[in-house]
Amino acid sequence: MTSALPAGFSPLPFNPARGLPQQVRVTANGRALAVTLVAMTGDIVGTLTLDRTRVVVDGAEEHATRDASREPDVRAGLTARPPDALGSAAVRPYLVVLDGGRVIGSAPVVVGRPMAFGTSQTTGLVIEILVTELRLAAGALVEPGDVGSRIVAGFREAGAGGPPLRGAVPREGNVHDLLV
Image 1 (spheres, one colour):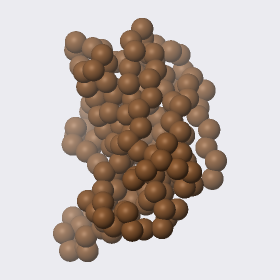
Image 2 (cartoon, one colour; image 1 turned 60 degrees about the horizontal axis):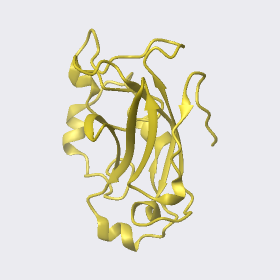
Image 3 (cartoon, one colour; image 1 turned 180 degrees about the horizontal axis):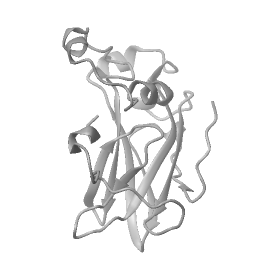
């Protein structure tokens, strides 16, 4: 599966062979920002013993499981077995954006969903990040190396043209819908 960024988005130069966590620097709206991609797992020992090329995060699968058009079944969630500690449901990739060493936002990555950062009254909307492909192998979580991971992400500045940037909080609906 190959993925491209939509018009108006500049690539974020993540290198999947460098492993995670990984930080890249970009300039948006005259600000020098640091964008960090991290992935957390509850089973680091298990990660160390897995085949380094085993996929533990598949963004396409993640996108499908978080389809907002489906109504969640609360009873099924309460009675379901816990997720595999080394599967896409349990290994959570996050983006953290810093402006001058100060965190202006963090959010779990959901492939295909633009994420707005810096939306407070003091900072205004600074940047929108879109991850179009995220595939992380077990080896990428513990050390650098080419293990078959793939990261395609881009950013655009507020007012950079194209469709308007979304705010972090929806104007209608439940703000808790943003929790993933």
